[in-house]
Image (cartoon, rainbow, N blue to C red; front, side):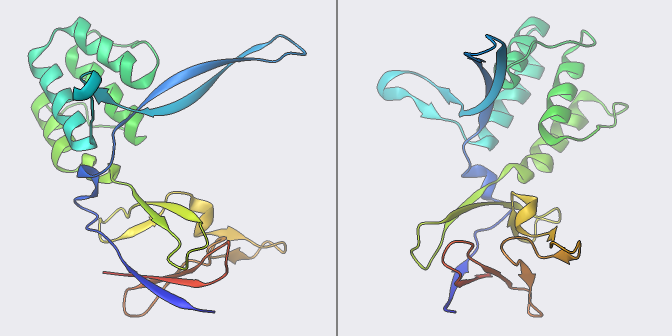
Length: 205
């Protein structure tokens, strides 16, 4: 198997290159039962119009959220919550509560609500937003396969966004390194096997 090396970008800066996303729902009707189902879809967040339209990056969206919480009304905060999540806000009527619910929804975490609004927003800007970076990589062997990676918890590198790519079980129930055969090397590099062409990709810093 051939080996090709790829240098990873800086995980702590990748959120500044990653388009921010919001969730919408599409209604799908089953033609046989006529039952209606809502299917979520993620789309890029833009501002402006026509020739001036711009796709926001995550760090820019975080700045907009902080501005809303500090300078807009509770009603406006609820409106932006619905715009970003696709669902109306339900909960305590305070701007802090709206911000907390959005952050918890986005990161799948529980925040310490004893913190002040400023402390929560500062954590969002300085720490949590770094985890929003995504890195798209096409197989360097040219087979056309692509993968999406997210920063590791310690922000030292990247791992597949799909957990099954790096851990799973075989037919006998034994643990495996996932469908990419994801392996950390002694020198800190990562090796994995392209699940399309079977060649080895090595991620280096």
